Image (cartoon, rainbow, N blue to C red; front, top):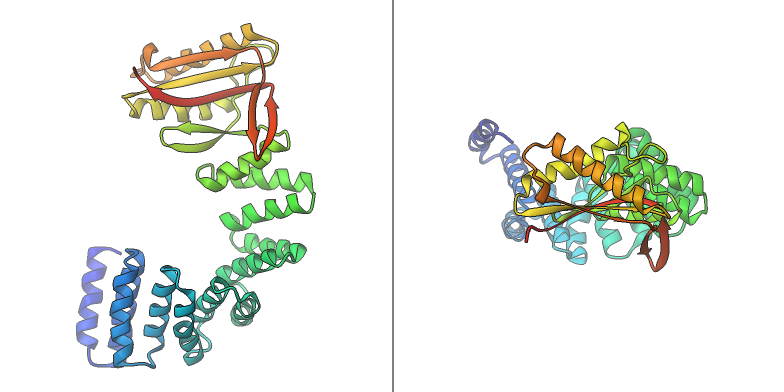
Length: 326
């Protein structure tokens, strides 16, 4: 929210103070501010005071429930969210967060009922659809969950949780083609973070190395596989993006050394040529890099890794990571 909008909103609060509309606007302003700043404890204190002054204010009950839920206190949050939902039964946000609290408290049956109430009011309510899918997943209603995630993705094609869980469901249901397509769809949109690491692991476990995890600085990132022209050290144009990510990171981390490791089963000479080719490309593409800031290694064997306790081998692989300069 811009400073100008904050000033206008604060002015409105002053003008409307003393009336219900003014209190509602004030509650909304304060509640959103504390949520945005993740200042949940202070928000709790403020809204406990607001409810002490007006116990039947639905918005105050809603925000107090949200702050308690954010502090992982679903049992304490639930009465306030239920009261907000009962006071304004057509308010989908109140019903949705009532469901979230019910789910966090372990009551999956009433959680689902809350989401279904939301969807009867608004069948395109994406959060309610998404968490209905999660609820079905938890209760092992896998096909129903798949259908629900499909609805979510129709409305919001880039939904990270729907993309990830749909691929995971395909794995559980032993649909390998759908699973592979699902992981690829997720990684094209979300290559960083814990779920990207998990998605890449599942993909690699199936023998697909289209993406691999690289340690770029302090972050694990899934990058598309670096590919060469067959039996040569010529880098394909589609692989330059992945190499560029490593190169750009190296230019920013001046106290670190980029390591390039190439594995090529039964052909150490080719592995060496490919490692040198990558270093040469990086030096030409990023003039601020110097040879001593790029280390190269090569092995005439497959890369061997362990994922979820299973040993896998990748016959052709390129890995990037960083070490100290000295």
